[in-house]
Image (cartoon, rainbow, N blue to C red; front, side, top):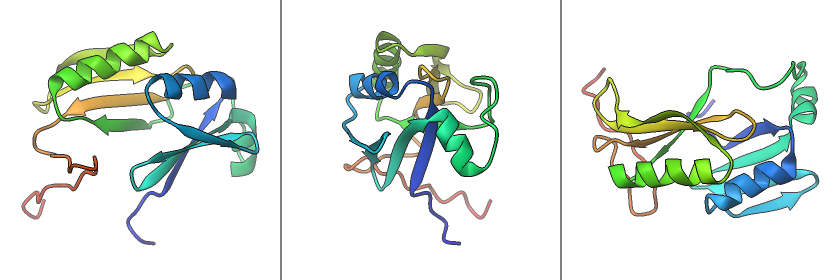
Length: 144
């Protein structure tokens, strides 16, 4: 298996609401056969009905959003961008679950949940600089 993530699928309870939320944050997607695809750098984010996604994966969808041990991250170029994106997420119908602050690792970040409870960390970490196209290359951690 090559070390790469190409597609992230999020199970949602209301596709139109979820699509509207991400579009309010400036994302542009394509709706195809009851899913919405967003290009996200070199990978893609897909919104799909939670029940259908669970059935496709061969699992029970459960009784609503719970913490599944996954937090998606979106790195930005400044602390001000962290604040602006958290405000935009709240304005679009998301919930800020952790206001922006310097975290225990020493960089500035905050977290929001989309309307279906999917968590996104928004971070400005100068140790993880972004290329002009927004791509991130991990630094050399010195053989760690």
